[in-house]
Amino acid sequence: MRMTQGTQLITIIGRGHSGTRAISQTLAESGVYMGEPLNESWDLIPPEEMYEACRILGTRVKWKGDLEWDWSDLLDRPIDPEFTRLIHSFLRTVLESKAAYRGWKIPETTLAYPWIVRMFPDAKYIFWVRNPRDSILGAHVTDDLHDFNIQYPDTQDIRLRRAISWKYQYDLVHAIPRPENRIEVRFEDFVLYQEEALSRLEAFLGFPLARVPVNPDPVGRYKKDEGENYFDFLETAMREYGYETP
Image (cartoon, rainbow, N blue to C red):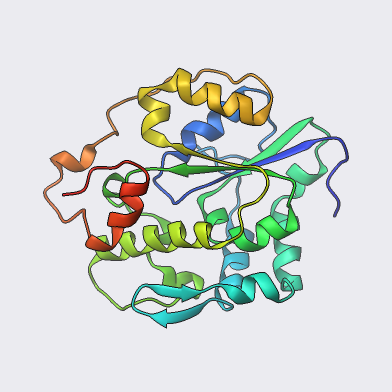
């Protein structure tokens, strides 16, 4: 399936509970066709084909032990044809659209990112980042990476699982050669400094964006949380993005 000529493809990557709903809604209300149907989180659904594509890719990820993985097979070997078929099927409404700007959002795209970039090298990628201490407070489909054929140290600690998932997805995005068009935006900046964040995004995308209502309450929720929400292996990434560490 070929993408319609003369149009721009946009996708959002970022772990679940990173606040990607806000940017997906922003794009949709700015005239970007985000596929159909969409759920209340502005995800393209149904998600099963994306999930299965992620599981296929996961079999190519080599666990090196502890919290280290080898993704070289995702760069050097051919993409599994079944992965390609599943992604084309999942994105059918997006790829067949004649809209000038088209895109999609579903957090699992992050797990498929290495091959998504190879399939769509000219797309624009918005990497949405949120403080992991807030991100791991709620449950998400990607909490247990075993569900996507990705190995990691066994644990029954659900917060630890979520933190490992956050780190895995951060490491994965940074392990892949950066595509020509990728921007990183912190959820906190979008909420607290919306105009500045939108100005950066407008310069990146090349068209004006709608202003959607934002709620500052989700920022820093971990401060009222009584459970474990910080793990030492998150420190490097948190410092990179300017998040305070204990």
